[in-house]
Length: 620
Image (cartoon, rainbow, N blue to C red; front, side, top):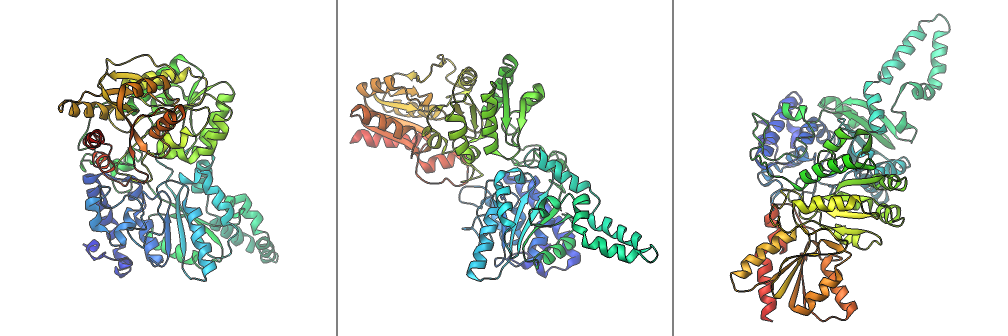
């Protein structure tokens, strides 16, 4: 196999040009086999095989720098830089990351994981090169979906000022995770279908030169005003008007054609945008047909494309999806907003039922939040469904545009807590901290599937900003008999014991029940309180349990800094109450990729770790 000869950076250059299509085929087969076993990002990687090969043929790594926007399409890049063996442990704890990592290889120029960052990072690398007087190429690869992010345009605005070479490769596959929406998508669609400029220009010139006596003179005059002609016939002038040379569209599956374009572009003194057309999921029929479904794939059967371990359990996202649709049916002012994640957040049924009240704004979380604020200011009830790690991209908008005006926007925060295989950039472990500092906002988290439904209904009638966080995966389906009516700022008693009180928030109630069972076997009967609210705290209950227990253990799936536990300690200090408080939370650090159960144990928020901690505290 040709792939056997790829063991180090630039080994691809030793393979004959005529064998490149076969190598591309082998890489696709390798990716399908490995991802079918371990899961991972499939469709996006299948779409950029030839593009990645062309980049590695045209440039020299690690001297030249490639910055992958988001980075979930970097698998072929990892193969070509000597990391084939890493796919055995892809996205597993202690194994190879599914995203670029500078600590993993010097061929990874920049750590990425969120969208719309590559042009900014690449521009920084290019200008640092100029300041230091060094010689290397910088290439930022960005998808058409990521181009909808405002940060990408901030970077393009500044990139237009660079006077040395800087290459931007626009990977256009008409998709982000779901199908792209909005004006940028429409603009790129126009470019895809437009007759190439060079073909039009050549045709005009050939026709005019046939005119007796005056043809050549007219042609020379037209060359002098070619910019005006380009304004009329080239949609790519959008970029050229910003001062960025536009080249394209280019066939993203023609390796030799792209290599030539890349090499030509590397000689240009200034910013260049190369518009490359690719097909997401290329080479695997199920992924080509359903690219969104195979964006992030669980282990699957290659022959059928179906998951190897299908489950019928209800997830928190399923609960949200069902309840928000019902709320929309009962309240015509309710509308739903997503940032290119209608599938992932469960909003597709709402979209189908109420298309006029559903808004996919593309990968643009900042806009989504302020847009929601505008809807709320006009009397509507917006529910913005978003992953925890993506909401942090819109912090200023939450603070300034929603909470300062006390507008009734509902933030439905999916994937809150440890999410697993996607690693540091996707763990939803900061939202309690970054939201609790903002005035006017209310923070809630459900203990189980029924409480999520109750909280969503509560939020629909709430007249101030409110955030509901819930974890990825199967919804907890126990404690069904514990369903007290939701009251603002009030917690819920799950079990009355003595000596130790577990004050648990959201997903940690399930863990508290496990801790209770383990301690009961050792003769210790602990109290469990379902906090329900991280802001405001149930102050009356906290005072009661402080007076009746020797130790309060706060439990949250969030970093310790700025979290629920610190808020509880601050409250007791303010009231002058002297009671031992043990915070169970994630340490002040990032959490890498891996199995969720393994990660929870590693950071000390699993039941066994908490039991050991409590026993140690009681011995004191």
